[in-house]
Structure formats: C-alpha cells, structure tokens
Length: 403
Image (tube, rainbow, N blue to C red):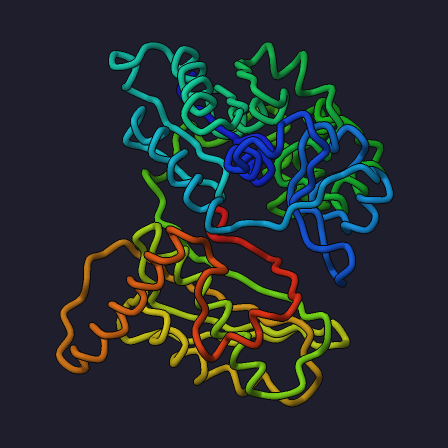
C-alpha cells in the first residue's frame, strides 16, 4: 500500500478558529458562510459540534440557524484559506515528489519508492497527521491504500483526526456494507436509479453484472463496477498538479441597475482572485466572466490572452472585451470571474508596454503588501469603492479546480 489521501477536516472552520486569537474554539458551534439576512447565504463549513445536528455544506444559512440557534456565523476569509492551503501542501511535498492536489483542502500522495526515506506508508500517514495538527492547528484524516480510490475511501471512512488503512479485507468488511451513495462519483440521482434496481450497498453493486451496468449507465457503469470492487489506477497519473483555474463570484442584495456597477463587480472579483493567484505564484492565460440573471438563468464567456499574466488591470481589460455581451438583456443578480490555464512559469519578456506593465505590477505588489499586513478590507481600488460597501455574498469559491 503506497497511496495516501490527506483530507483537512472542516478546513474553513478550523482555519478561522486557529487564527481568531483565542476568540473561538473547536468545541464551539461555528458556521462559516454568508449572512442569513442576505439572500443565498449558504453554509461553507462547520465545526463537528454543528455537523452532529444535521448541518452540512451547501445548506442555506437560514435553515442551519434554525437547526442550531446558538451557532456563531463567521464570514469566510478566502485569503487566509489560500495561505493555509499552501502551508499544508508544503508539508505534504516533503514526503514524495509525486503529489496531486485535489481542491484546496485535499491531496493525494504516491509514496512508491520513498519507504527508505521516511518509513512505511502507515508511519508517514501518522507523521503527516501530527505535523499538520502541530504546525497548522488543523486536524486531518488520512487514508492509505493500494490505489487512489482506496485511499480516498479510507480518509472519508473516519473523521476527524484519524488514519485508516484500507486493504482488501478492510474493503470487504467495512466499505462494501456502506450505501452506494458513499462510493466516489456516485451522486444522488445515480444512487436513486441504483436503488430502483434493487442495489443499495457497495457490496451489492460489486456483485451486479458488469455488462448489465454498462447497458444501463454506459461507460460509467463499468467504472462503478470497478470502483465497487476496489479497482482503480495503481498510481497517480502526474506529479504536483498545477492549479487549472481559480474563480470567485458574488450575489447582490439587489439586482445591478447600471453598467458601471457591473464593471465594478467584475473588477472587484478579479481583484480578489488575482491576489489569490499571485499568492500561489501562478499566472493566467485566460479569463472568463459569468452572470446569473434575476430569473436564475446563467451565461458565461471566456477569452484567451496573448500571454500569461497575474496583473489585475491586464486581466480586467481583457474581461471587458467579453463582459458587455452578457449585460443588458435581463437584470443581473450574480457576477463571477474565472482565471484559467494557469501556470507557474517565470515572467515573460515583453517587447512593448514595458513601462505600463511594470507600473501595474508595482501597484499590485503595493496593494498585496498592505493586505498581507492589514487584511483584504484594508484597501480598495477606486472603481470598486462603492461596491465594496455593499452587503454582497461571496460564493462559488473554487481556487483550485478538482483534478
């Protein structure tokens, strides 16, 4: 067994607790999310005290507070989460050259060939668990298995602060009795169809004819059968994954009425997400804009850049080339941006606009420095000041695409 999956427990909540200066504790009923007085506020994370009352990520804040009236609702701090995520990854990277980041709070480790350096995979699992707890103040669950699937199911099996070793016997005794919706990549609708076929557990799925599953579900049916039997790729496909994209969106208490407000919303979101990108040393070769209208319909456009950049003003200028085509047909209630095709390559030599580029770069550096010392709300770009004073709800935070 040489594949590990490390999963930070209630990451947003425990980050906020760790950096609260003693104001909050892990045993307090804490919810990370939007303001219940504003529309579309949802639970992003919660402490286990709250989770035991049936509250989960994605639940409306209003409903969560009804279930747990004593809950303390804390607004999200995405800059903090990004920084903590990088600290977590720096620990993980010390144990293997082959790492695959899976979102902001999870990572796979291919430990093959590293046993002579740090001991067995089980020993390393416990070492990582204790290091993350000691250095970051956050507990993790670690799964160890023969393949990524087994490792992931192991980290999900017991939380928080646990190591689970998943071999063939453990799979048969402990994983197969679980309901089918606990298996990776089986969602609610697929689980419902399987239940209608009389298949309720992973073990029952494993015993189902593979050909029948393929006939009903297509290629996905073969994958379900393989996963139910603990079959997966034996190795990670690549080493340290470059973040594919970063995105940010916000929902407004009132629909946007002016195009100037729309432009300010785009710049506000780009300011946040480009800052997170610079923290991780990335540059984007593409930018996208998305809008959700008052009738909940959705449209988006994206554009490729001539060269990768992490400069906010350059990304904003590119976004305006596609943004206005999304404006005007209906009132807008949500605006989002996405930076994609990210890379960690060095500065590209410029043949023109060197002075403009350098001035913009210095401005970003100065703003980043102030925010590092005093927080994201300490400084705003002039065009976004009025919007920064609005009570908006940030959502759809996805700084690292799932691999």
